[in-house]
Image (cartoon, rainbow, N blue to C red; front, top):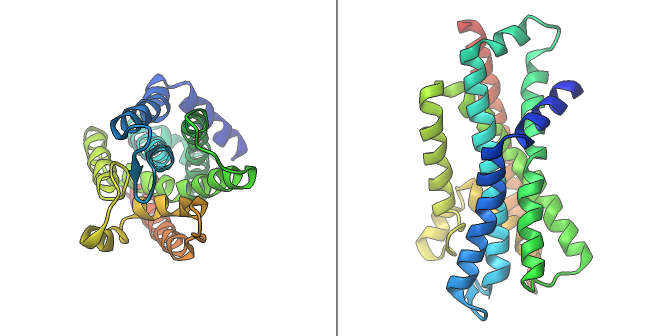
Amino acid sequence: MKTLIKLEILRTLRNKRYVFFTVLYPALMYFFFINAYGDHGTAGGVSAKSYFMVSMATFGAVGAVLTGSAQRISLERKSGWTRQLRLTALPGRAYATAKICACAVTTLPAILVVFGLGAVEGVRLDAGQWLGLVAVLWAGSFVFAALGVALGYAAEPNAVQPIVMIVYMLMAAFGGTWFPVSGTLKTIARFNPVYLYNQLAAFVRPGTAFDTAAAASLAGFLAVFVAGAAFLYRRDTKQA
């Protein structure tokens, strides 16, 4: 399984589309938002530079795992690669686990690049807060890696890209990625895993503790997505 994980990581990092859409694009959007708000702009009660540093890092991380895993799995099903793997000694759970782990690892560049830009732009956190942010956002990305695996087995190759993009953009739009959510929208957003993902970073704000409720809810989403991926994998096995 380690060999498969290594192979998946290398395949992803060599993909030029991955580099642009999950690393460079969120970085460019970060500059767009902080310039739109100005040097002294605020968003969600904090500086725009801090707010969008987190939201663009999560945007890139979610994009990395959703688009990468879903599209690749769907294409592998079409090409017969998944069927070939089933003929080996590799168990199905190891295949799914390898996909989730490999996708989660590829979120680190998206997170680190935007965090680096935030530091250059003047976002000041202590070493523990920086490390904590990287850790919680990386851990949270496993939720969307599992969702990507599930979508990869649920959709056909010619349909998976638009389905993933619709899911991706809707969750981002109503999850606080593009603008702070408040009022009724905030109440609804608590059922949105992207909003909960962004909330994991709230502990770096003065006087704010780590959001254990958001973490617990994300753990629930992870369990649901993993169960869905396992069910869809077994269904695909029976149809193959």
